[in-house]
Image (cartoon, rainbow, N blue to C red):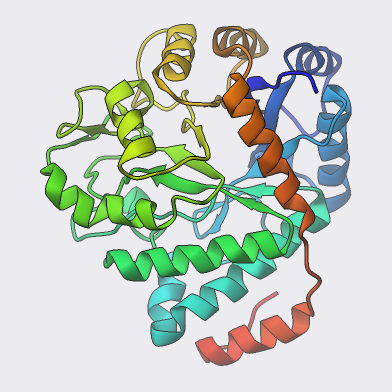
Length: 335
């Protein structure tokens, strides 16, 4: 099998143009990601997914952000509308783990029906009273063990549908008091405290196959953001014990500054396996793909093993799950 490009890339519209098809064929990205601008109707989404895979000549992963709340690229009539994750967790109380398995099993079923096989969820960041509002209601709770248990159920729900989950934002984003879409958060919390709280969640989930980095500086480890910090990425591998693929968060976010090629090359050299780049021109996508290069031999083997995990799909009775979810939430389930 040819080496995968060490990138995940997007498209400009609802179908691929000739230049994009040729570009994807040449750079062979590991996978693709969809945004709202890429979505019109169900048949169109299925067609676009087919175009992506046809361009690279293989069953490449196609990702989407479908958390619920503000962060859901699919909306009615293409898919159900979902409240923010933390809203459901709080509403469910002691049944939160089961409720979130049901919720994300139904979400994963919607993705599968459209040809999408990877979701940027769960958000395993630990919420606290100072967590920036861009992230707070995307979290699952304020207690590490509780959050880790819910995230495990969410991951299992995806696997049961043949969908790959991506835990984010490793090793934790919850202590950020600013939005990393616009500026770079710096966390000054002592390492011992981080190890017992934010980092503990990701340690409990370290066997999962895919994670996405936080655009955050952990001053207890280094003075560089996670994707550019050998020390922090080594810590994620050794102390947190995460052995799967590490993806950067979108490098077009304003938390990062500088040349896209330098950002991409440095991320790979620092220990990231894949660079995620979104919302750029075709020229900039070329530059990022060139700088990121192809996956290392180790990353390629992890990637190939991860792709096989899409084949363990189990069928469900969606109506039965909807009924159970409604009963646990004590509300009418909305299609």
